[in-house]
Image 1 (spheres, helix red, strand yellow):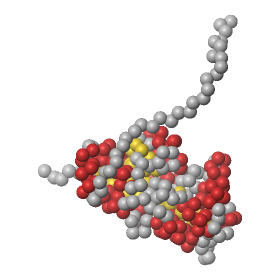
Image 2 (cartoon, rainbow, N blue to C red):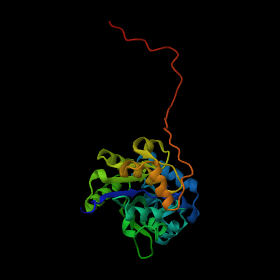
Image 3 (spheres, rainbow, N blue to C red):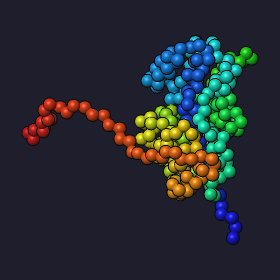
Image 4 (cartoon, rainbow, N blue to C red):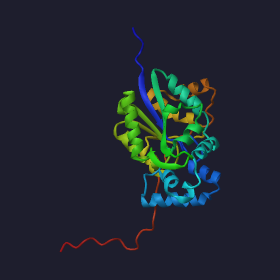
Length: 277
């Protein structure tokens, strides 16, 4: 009998606050001496106005906002990446997925609206550059941003994901997407409707309502747990043994259901039934 055929999956992850503890925009603001409150105010204003795709606020500021555009050069973005605080075990997650698990192989890619230079710098030596997709700029000879070439935000993430799916020749039900915020909603809905698997790594309400599973941890290997359960089909003892084989003990493993409620006072008088006249 021949070897069991390998089942191939595409594993795609967001970057800011998914693989990291920080947001690129906050770190860049601090690096340039721009008050973080100013960045928050401008980004939130664009989000409320739906001026740009959610997640692309930083790219818009870098190109159009005088305070950011006049001061940012390409080397600043690489500096931001070196200052980003990463979550634990990104390299190990990449190696495990690349090596495969019990007949399942996972191609690991990073899809983010963050500037690609930030992601490449932060993940240098951990994830290959060709597996990283972020916002791309064109620069002049002095490193000043001239224009946006591509933004991997909103439907931009969907386009990149579809391109990778075609390139890797995997079915839509063999796609896993991991994200943390509202900028991931479009791609999560896209993956879900085609029977893929989505994982949230934050308690952001709209994301947890859409994602098929939510995992909270400072260690990115925690995202393996729902994959090992749902896709590989392992039970808790097998998962614990697998993580221990890679030098990690499961200290706490709590599973709860979260209900989001908004309550208001009842009206003083019940609504009167409409007259039959």
